Image 1 (cartoon, rainbow, N blue to C red):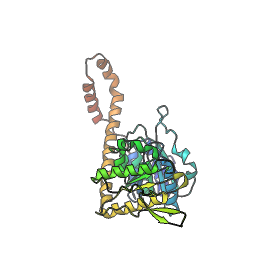
Image 2: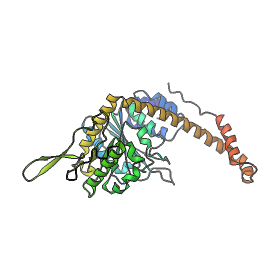
Image 3: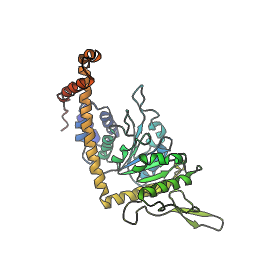
Image 4: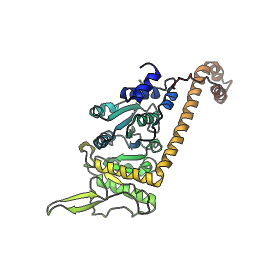
Length: 365
């Protein structure tokens, strides 16, 4: 599969090895990768894209795996992009999700790709949205983007996914207020994972308070002090199952009375798949709402604009780096001697970058 034409034909024939190779070409920015993406763009926009984000140690990988299995069992083809930290020595991914999801990767109708962040501060690898485009064009129904978990700077996901799940754990409680100006604001669904640990109910209450403050109503949505919060949702409706036991069920729906979206706060124990069906149900409800309200069209329009901007910036950066490598030795002596300023050097190299030779195009017709 040496030629790009053969790669395109295999991709269109449904060969997952061709999908993996195409993603590698894009991730490595191999010559002609943009033309490859253009040739394989047919069908992009069909799959639902779900972001799973949150601080390190929240159990995002386990939750993603269980969510993928549930979707697969419902007849969906699921692709996962797991963004991992980059090794400063090799440039590869550290603690790759291929290791954490090895069993899932062997299951039918599930495709997993681990990608190195390569220094991206937005929580997503530079080529993540383009890899998602390839998975979309390949025919997957759901594309899950699991980010590396860098905290407040992980906001880029909101501009890539249709629905974003922010995963927290009981130990996150003290940091909720610190996170609310960043990571907390991108959530379409809050998920308190590892909810069998102490402090889970308290964290749910703190998130509800935070939501109420942001909405301007500090009492709205806050459960009474004796209300129970059940797995899958908060607050819970208590039902008597027998004289000696009680079970809890989450309140149905997350649509606000004014027709907007009331961000739900769910509880899960991903290692036992508890609460995951409720999470999937909330994601379905959210997608139905953004579709009916026109929010989906707005989000995807902004995503396309954002992607176009990133492509433009990437091209400019690559041209600038090429000019730097070619011209730095010429300017270095005068720069070190103080006869020329860094600003003048940068200005001159910028002029050279503007006339940099463009890479040869591949014929992908």
